[in-house]
Length: 82
Image 1 (cartoon, rainbow, N blue to C red):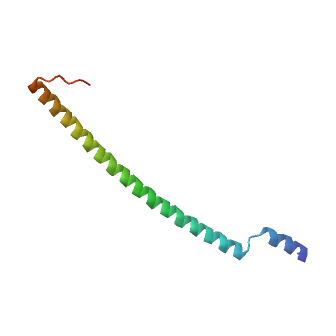
Image 2 (cartoon, rainbow, N blue to C red):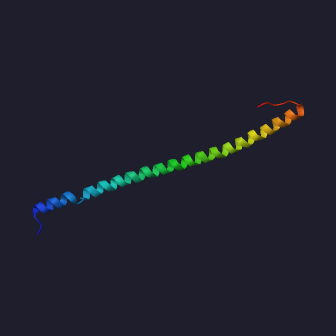
Image 3 (cartoon, rainbow, N blue to C red):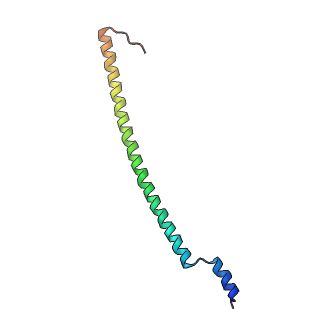
């Protein structure tokens, strides 16, 4: 048979309903924070992807301009120095 002292010792070790309720609240808070972080990371990835696309387009445009400048220099007889 359990004595009152045994019950007190057990209640100090076993989680109460309040402990479990607090743990659930903490887990729900963490879940919301993780979801917010996932949304933020998704937005960041989309922005970086857009920047990469724009960067590639700019590189192509600069290359095209460089070729045009070289062609103009050849036709005009101008020597370009780098």
